[in-house]
Length: 117
Image 1 (cartoon, rainbow, N blue to C red):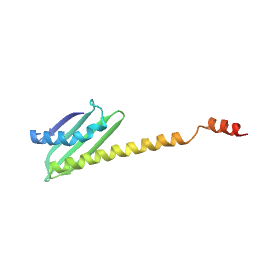
Image 2 (image 1 turned 180 degrees about the vertical axis):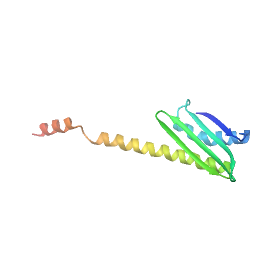
Image 3 (image 1 turned 180 degrees about the horizontal axis):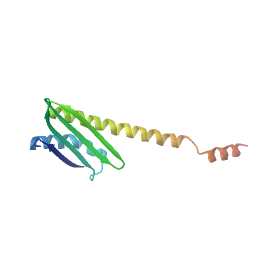
Image 4 (image 1 turned 45 degrees about the vertical axis):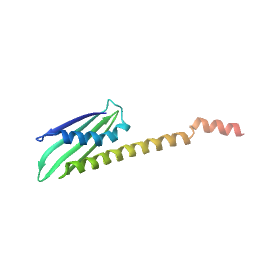
């Protein structure tokens, strides 16, 4: 996964970059290596920084944002939110797949009824 860090009115230091890379690496197992993860940091307003993560993968956009006084702890929360969105999508896809497998097509039901007679 490729990482794109942007600082709006704030400098993205090497420490921040290293920490974000470490945390976002947890999400890399869910995506292709060509997927881009955009992380945007906004300067302190009213004592809090705004941080958001956006990952566009296939036809889905995963996004999480937070206003926080502590930049490092917020990264943990944002990664957890993205993981939750991924799990939710996977559960929905599995449910749809199982429903499709369990329910026979109408033509198949008629064929089965004809065979029983």
